[in-house]
Image (cartoon, rainbow, N blue to C red; front, side, top):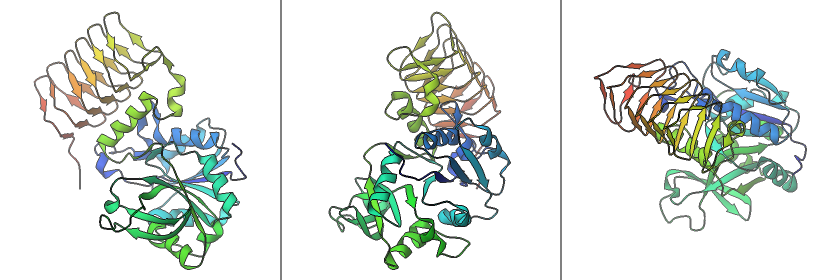
Length: 365
């Protein structure tokens, strides 16, 4: 589908990632490996496919970790915008409005979705709107802000309505917008919220806000269980994620690239193995990802889990609903419970037990 003239995007990527600790100790949440590449690299690839030629990344005070994305081969210019103090969801976007060239896509950097960006842009252009918001349907709207619609036009925003009070209104903001910069330029610089300030303000000024309901994939990746669920959607093929394009499907969603699978190892799809080694007698999958340089030793079982780059899983270790960060070692003889998060560079020794639900090292307030 034609892009309809929107060639810039803004990605809000300054979240601290507190709920994903300890994986976010020293690594910004949007740069955590997702199917073998930083999550934001996949977002940039999707934007490039939608015809975007310049993307602004609104990040926190430390821009250095994001500099590597400037070299990602996405065929676009990447500008990194620091946010030394938190400016809420729209303040960082407002800070660059005067440097934009026409309507812009705005995305949250911690949401995984397959919304058709070209379709969203076309809808925005067709209705000559000040803003167009992608919406997703939910069964229970009482925990969300609801976009009240008349047809496709949004006429009100109601925060966390009690069950049954808005019959027929089941759609919430999915965190992807097309925005006319002039509509945002009327707001002052500084802390600013799309949800509380910008969108209600546009309506109050008589501006038109359109919506496009998307029934595909939409998920906030802000917790370990959601991170695993997002990886599983990509591995299963429910979500088309660019990072997996370099892997080959060997049947039943066994996705491999440069993998060493020793005879006697078992892979159960959906599973992804990139530049990793799986020893004889080990079982990996279903719903498992092994990043580059991972070694899974004999008799180990890795299910519903992610093992990030350079980590080692010892003989006989069983991982179920576990995320292992980069360059970690789980020795043979250790015991790992379910729903565990092991951070980067950790060493779990033989005889140690990491109980279910634990974070190693622990989360910080």
